[in-house]
Image 1 (tube, rainbow, N blue to C red):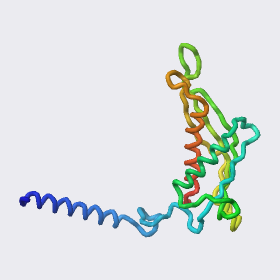
Image 2 (image 1 turned 90 degrees about the vertical axis):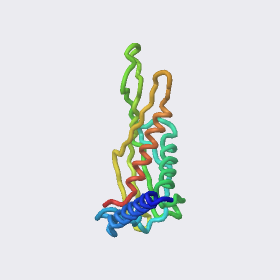
Image 3 (image 1 turned 180 degrees about the horizontal axis):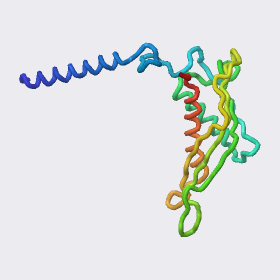
Image 4 (image 1 turned 180 degrees about the vertical axis):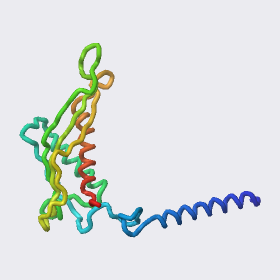
Length: 183
């Protein structure tokens, strides 16, 4: 190893050391003051959530939409939060909801035939996250919505099921994001 190589390696190590020091110095003990090394996204004292199968509103006629949404929410809770999904009798909290409305609209049309080329599905829900120990409502949302798109035109020939899967995944992600602590 020659002197130039040694100097380059030392310069690289000193740069790495400065970056690490700057990162740690930029972290604050109070999460509202900047970066933090604490895990503060989720509420402390809550370890478990019950998620009963969501209800379907009076004007929602698509079968199994509420079951698919419940499954997506449960999976998203297990992936993105420290909470454990358990039976209601063993849970600290419960997340209950209703699919209020499902809308479809054409985003574009085939100019030759006049048939829809791509469609948007919008799912609107209402849900409540309640602390079972105190009765406190932690989160309550009405007219909470997410949309998905599917392409009916050749060569994809997708159907409502694929578009609703996209909307359900987005909705489940957004619902679980509301379970984070408010700042």
